[in-house]
Image 1: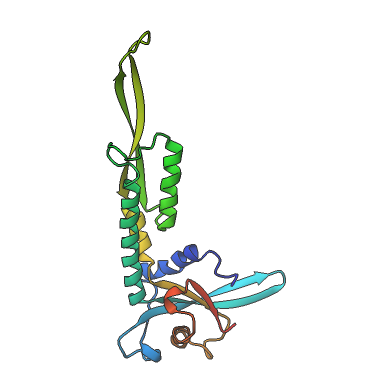
Image 2 (image 1 turned 90 degrees about the horizontal axis):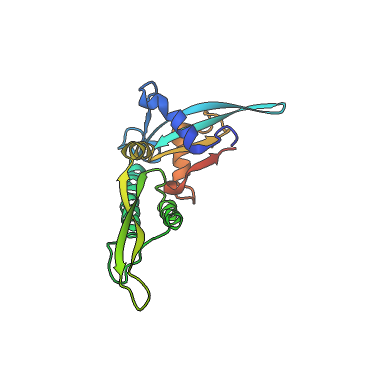
Length: 211
């Protein structure tokens, strides 16, 4: 819906009062029974929308799933490990049959593709170090000896810990949007509607219900 806009930015905005302990959360159990072991926590916010001459409100259900968060954080950890290994493998030690990058642009393009593939762009800092090697080529006939210079690039990878911390912090949080009044679709009931829908709860990034 129009009131949500860019999901990551909106999510961070809606989570600020949670981090600042200004917003309490409702514990949600199986089938909406809040006295059972919590499967989720959440609260709701109201967003006012205006389009031309039409005004309306939307309810945004801000929900956190501990199980989803655990799986997502484990997945992020694996992606970081795999991306780091893939990047470092681009510049192996010198040796027969081991490809060496001589062109910086080509190497940077390959690193960018790896970061995008593993979804960790901005989470790894990659440094490009050039190494120059010289070797003497013996003369032959009327050709004098000469020095041949070649350059290869070596990569160093460091984790952007602050960016990773922020990425981990929002794992498990989801936004659900509805136009239905609370009397018809409460926070607890809304979440359980999603959990029982054909769409897997774990895959939802942003959804709309009751509209």
